[in-house]
Amino acid sequence: MGATNYLALTILVPLLCACTGTEGDNQDGVPSSVALLVAQDLGENNDGCPTFEESQSAYERFSQALSSGEANVVGIASVRIIEECSGAGGTHVFSSATAEGNRFWLGSHGCWLDFPSPNLDTGVIVGLGVQTNTVQQGEEGWCMQYPGENATFSSDIETRAMAWFASEAEATRFLDAL
Image (cartoon, rainbow, N blue to C red; front, side, top):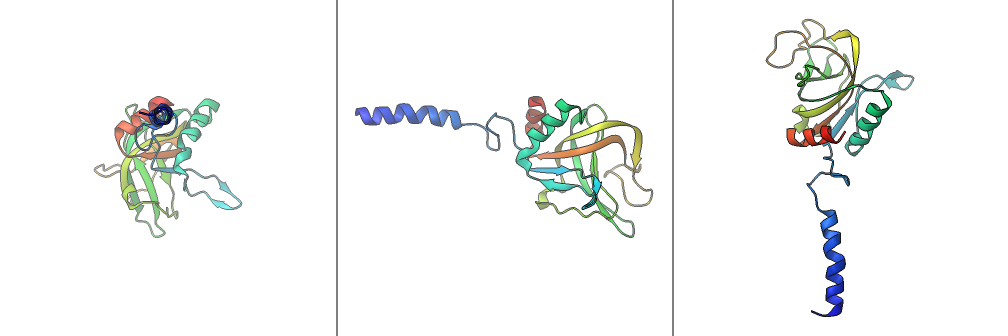
């Protein structure tokens, strides 16, 4: 092996090793979400409907919200997309209970979400929110139940964001990194 080949290999091998990691991980080894749904406030140019944002920003957004105190609840849950059956309709994303018993909810009456992938109708999320003293509850008779449950969906968490992951293992790694 010539000196040039040896030098090339000594430079190339460490670079390749530094770049390895699980597919979908960011530079810090934190799994990247496949989608990020974020709550929006009512405002002059906003109807208050949640929107999908750049999924690569999930870790930064969650970390900042937790460290600043903007959010104080985070957890892993399964989610389902529910279409409200009222006259005006609306799309809602409801979660199952987390290990701590919290439930996340984004969506609203008259809001239609434009999903970036048809595969997001179910999945595993890390939810971010704020514990409240009030219970938000869906309207009775508007088909607002989590699948398999009879009670109208309710939550005492004001959800700020939901980040979808390819698996529960990736969601757990993301949560552990926070």
